[in-house]
Structure formats: structure tokens, C-alpha cells
Image (tube, rainbow, N blue to C red; front, side, top):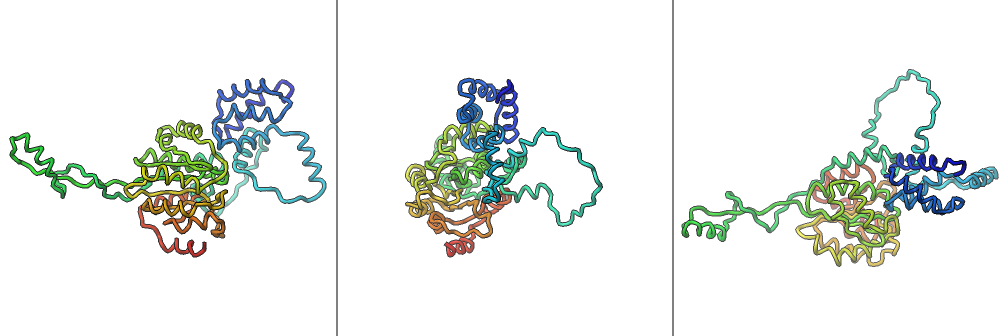
Length: 395
């Protein structure tokens, strides 16, 4: 960061963050330039902290920013040390790349001159191949690039969530209704001196049941929660009686924030009100808080509950079975969406998963667009008990 090129490097760094999907604009760039004048440029930690505080505003962007900072502002001494270690011989296999690594790699390569490619005429057999749209449907959210995530968000906004309309206790006036409204009939007759000229009738109101979503935002679920928030925002703005809660180490009600029509404004409000993004997971404690403070308010009239979590509880499933049982008895249908089901060899081994399985009506994956479409298609059908029996026996 020497040689009088600091401002230009900051501009290129901000552009790379924007290409990677972070909302970094001119205001963040000006704030970053002012922030680094207040810290010691010789301290890498101070510079990283100053840039992170001035350029990002959402908890879920912190990991991606740290990875981008390490790639862009590389430490020459660390590179020499890595080269010396590599020269000693084969080492242990590298760890799995963190989420967003593919997007950052594409952002780093953007704008670099590529060698000209020689166009060769090739004949391609397109038999049994899939289109880009079909490939997007089955791609894991965690493996998507920035452009693919943007396209997935557009596809998610096209989804509509159907739920069977159910009769409620409320009634509305209907001349052809099956129920006679004696009180309205007498009230109407008073306008004509007590003469009854017509019989007032009513009909029961039918409406979809309330939808309640409990979404895990811990470190292992943050990548999926970011994309599922777009789905929940679309659902909350498409229908009424939708309640959304996020939980990690605590429970946060974001129903009011998601009702904002502008998605970016809604997500900024969510980020400001949720302090435990990408932290630990206390599923049992979060469900206990929900059952105690919110269940009676939002679980009436045959509510459907979507529980989005991988079931990995840091408290060792303490109190989880009891709270899951109470939640199951408070709603008409409890659907557990777990991204771990994307693995063919998945088995319910952890204590949290084994404690939760006996108290759910459906156990479904949620890791790509195809799984979301399957969820939408099955919500209007009754639960499959045979599939749940298989999982309960496996647990």
C-alpha cells in the first residue's frame, strides 16, 4: 500500500467487492478512504478492521469480506513462507474453500486481459445434455457464483406458495349464503318500521392458514439463510398472516422488516435487528422462547410451520425434544427443511436431529431451486407418512 497508489487500490478493492455481490458504493469508498487515515497503515489488522467497519453493513458479509481482503491485500512474507513450506514436500490436503470463494475468484479475474482464443469449428452432440436453466435448478446454493445467485434470486421471486384455504369462524354477508343472520335481518327491518322484506344470510370465510417460518442463521446455515430470505420476502409480500423468525443464539422476529416492499431496504433492516448472524446455534433455547412468547399469537387457525435448520445444536439437544413436541402440538403441520439432505448418504446421527425427527410431519431438503419448487408443490397436498416413518426408524 505504498507508492501513492492507495486511493487507486481502494477503488479496485471496492469494485472487486461489488463484483462479488457485496453492496459497496461511492459512500462506502469515501468512508474507507477516511477510515484508513485514522489507523496505522503498517498494521494489517488495523487496516482490515477499518475497511470492514466502513465498507460492509451486514453480518453475513463479514466472512466474504475477510476472504476478499486476504486475496486482494496479499502479504508478501506469508507468500514466501507458503512457498518454502511447499518446497519441503507434500503436505496435508487443502481445506475446503470457504463460501463465496468462487465468486471472489471470478471477481479477481474480471478485467484482466485474457489470451485470444482461436476459434475452432466444433461439432457438439447435444443429446442428453441440459440447458443452463436446468443446471441452475439443481445447483447447490453454496456452489453458485455471483451471477448464478442473482439469477436464482430472480427465479425465487417467481415462486408462489400455495396453501389450502380453510374455513374460519368468521362470517361475511352473502345473499346466497347457507346461514341465516337473524340479528342483521332484524336490524334491517327496523329501517322499514319492523317489516321484514328480506332475509339476511352469511357464509363462513375461507382463507389460507397462517404461515410461520423459523430459520436458522448460524455459521453452518448462513449461506442458505441469505438466499432463503429472498424467498421469505417474496412470500411475506404476496400473502398476509406470514410470520418470520430467525434464530442462532437467540430468537429474532423479523416479520415487520420483511413486509417492506423494497428487498434491499428490508434486508438492511433485518441486518440491523439481528445481532447473532453466523454465530452458534441454540435450537432448544430458541424454540422455548418461541413457544413461551409467540406461539399463542401466531399459531392459531391451523398454522403451518416451516423449520429451516440443519439440526446441529451446540447445547447437545438440551430441552430440544420437549420444545419440538410442544411446537408440533401447537400447529397443524410442521415441516422441517434441512440442507444436509442434499447428501445421498445422510443419516440422522447427531443428537439434535434424533431429538427433532419424531415431532415433524415432513422432512425435506432445501439447498437448491429444485428443492424449493418441490416444497411449493407439496404444500397443498397432505403429508407423506410413509417417508417420515422411514426417517424415524433410521433415527
